[in-house]
Structure formats: structure tokens, C-alpha cells
Length: 343
Image (cartoon, one colour):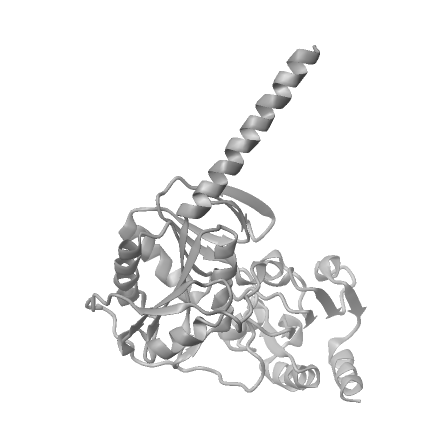
């Protein structure tokens, strides 16, 4: 029995050693391309989450940017820790992030670099671009990952976060979008990546950018704000939403969000929607008023550090996830809270 047990232990040790050696060998072979976003010549810091995810894979990490002022954006990105090289393409045709011309651009540079993993944020840009890239590479995309277990095993939520799926990919190139709230952006100073010009295929695009109509605000960006206040259908009208939520947000120095019900009812712009079909946020404080807590909404904010809720229904599902709950009429409680915060 003793001999059998010793043999089993030795076999286990050899298996573990082989696994460790395999992981070390893979780390030397792995190479990640992190696709970063830029707008109006400025780097989107939230997109740096792709770099953090890349560090979990081992091996070298190369960042990729494209658009007007590409070299300047690349030099800014190169200061982030964890990157060895930044590839840039300086061409205004890529400013608007159109997937129709971005996909050929990205595929050209992926093939040239021979990358094993291609990562970008699970944003509107990433969700539009990466399916085309994976189709052109004839591989399967892995979307919205929240953890990396190994070079080919990834974790992602399904069913609005009610179940967690572990996915294993055998594709030679893994095309992945990452949930920004699961991979905090690296430090943006202290890095010393080299900057190199990439290949520009200048592919024709069947799509033309016409215009955009954006709701501009001096408040923090919803996707990266440390504090968020959100309003739901309980606010009853756009007038009440505009009367109650902006003063509360200003008193806290917070970004404004909204539930899908509020957006569909016209209370708020759809760029403010938080949830499964909106933005994923994970601020230090998420304060919501008039939101019942449907699972689709919870999927976009349940990773918040502190969740506070105001609702007149004591049995509302939001109170099951809230750290702090206030049962009461929001039309009384929100102005009262705003005044106390101002003081």
C-alpha cells in the first residue's frame, strides 16, 4: 500500500511538473495584441483593460491604435505598464471606429505579427469589430470574459450573469473581448514601450460615416466613473428625471446612469443605459432611485463596490443586492439626500 501511495504521489508530481513546464513554455511562445480605442486623438483609458487581461496570459503584449495622430496616441499608450511595443496606423479613415475598414486593418497586422491572442474591450467598438475579425480569421470569438484560467481557458457570464461558463478554445488565434470592470486598467505612467508603425491595407469601406448626435456633459464618464447615480421608471417622467438626478449627481461628483425602462420611456439618453444591453459599470458607489432591480439591470452594475438603493417597494429585488437600502418615496428622499450632501 505504501509503495502504491508513493507511486501515486510521484505520478502526481510529474504531472504537475509537466503542467508547469508546459505553462512556462507557452508563456515564452504567447503573444498578445491589445486593441485600444481612441477618440478625437485621445486614448480611451478604459480600453487599457485589455492590457491587464493580456498580462494574465504571459508572454509579450503589443498594443494597437489607429486614427488621426496615431503616433502621438501610441506614445501615450506606451507609458502604460505591461506593454512591450505599440503599433500605430496614422490615418483619419479609422477615426470613427467603423468595423468595415477596421477589420481588414486589424487582420493584416494580426497575420503580420503572428499573435496568439487578440484582446479588446467589450464596448460598442469591440462588439462591432471583433465578430468581423474572427470571421476573417476563421476562428470563434470568445466574448465578455471576466477571468482567464490559462492560455486557452476563459470564464464568461451567461444568462445576464446568473450562470458562469468556462470556455476552452483550440483555435490558433484567440479573438476575445474583455469586460472592463473585471480587469482594472494598468498604471498609465512608468511604462517604456517602443513605438512602431503598422501596416495599412487602406481597404475600401462600404460604410460612410455621416454624423453623430451626442449628449455632452462635464460630469465623469459613465463607464469609468467612481460614483454613479441611476434613475429608473419610478421617476415617472423625463421632467422628474431631469429635476432630481442631475442635482444628486452634482452633489456627489458622480456620473448619471439609467435603467433600460427609463431609457425606453424617454427619460434619459440611451448612452446612459446601464445593464445587459447597456454599459457595465463597477464604481465605488452605485446609488439608484426608482429602479426595481431586474436581472438585466443587475448584470450591468452588480460588481459595484457599494450599492445603495431608494425605492418605495420594500420587496423590490434591488434590495437583495443593495448594501444600503432606503424604503420611501424617492420624490421626497432624493431632494432630502441631495440637500444633506450639499451641506
